[in-house]
Length: 89
Image (cartoon, rainbow, N blue to C red; front, side, top):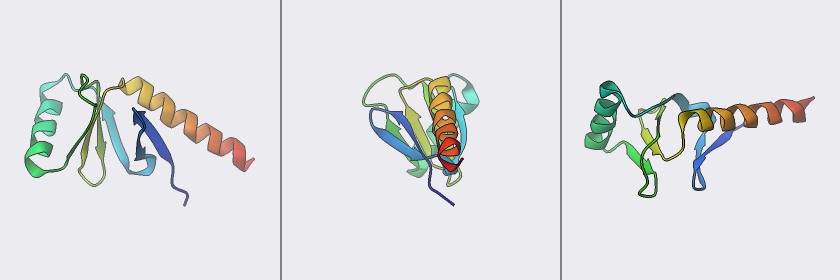
């Protein structure tokens, strides 16, 4: 099993294998998840002081805030996966 990494903005990288969800921070349930993550000490703020545009939730219950759009993170994740597939063939 190879480790795949995805850039979530500003040089911050997360293991793609650990990502459960990439969501927008706008809804009340996601805001609640962010608050609970902060209270539990499981919040990682990777926004560099910018507006939070995506919330990445991992299988270890870490909540990661990113300043790039969820769609951008998804594209980066998909691009990295397709490049790996091309290298195998």
